[in-house]
Image 1 (cartoon, rainbow, N blue to C red):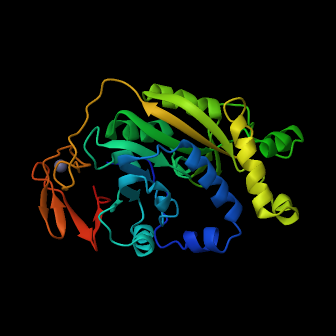
Image 2: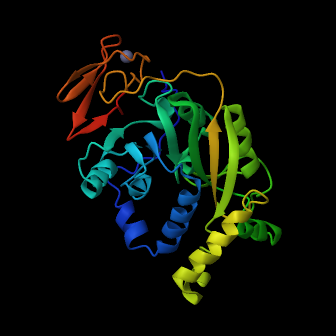
Length: 300
Ligand SMILES: [Zn+2]
């Protein structure tokens, strides 16, 4: 039988952090994201889920939270994150699939998903899963790549691009890299019981021309001003949104032990058994390794 799960874009074995961020001339993108995050993040909180955490580039920005759970599909990205951030009780590392999150319902009081929806074939399915693990009132910061950006609009009008930036369906730019229409994303958020509170448009000046001609600090300042127009119109390649989880859904009791925290991604049982190197589900007999302190739920 074919696997019903959507395909996953994995960064396993990738040197993405080094080649794209550290040596790729992406200081501008990194700094304008930091500005947007500072504007949207709650000042403090208990438990934050970072979806698509990669090598932990953004994780130190969540220092107001008592604990951060880094989730990524790639074990090697999480190993890089652990090297960067250290093995501290403030961080929990989980390799898993966003479509089948291995956490009990209503666990987190915040979640972030940055440069990650971009890889989702089935974005609404992923967002429904995120909503399930949030408690009512939780903050959800979602960043997505927008197809309705100025460059795409100009290229389309000049007939240098076949796909329309004005229609609601996602466009697959390269394999498993999707750009979305802001109106479509807002519709999915509402369908998944998220109440949108704020939008910031980000990375207006990422073109090489701007980066060559203008000093970095000036570009970051300009973008931080332009971000504030995000509730009125969205013409940037990246959009940050802040939503609240709404609806009468469960709240999980706070725990720091794996039992009562994780839930079997195969059968949904929260009754897992723990040994030093494994978690296992007595209900469906699945076992997951814990590799160097990283919970690996990928084989579900
Ligand atoms: Zn199970």
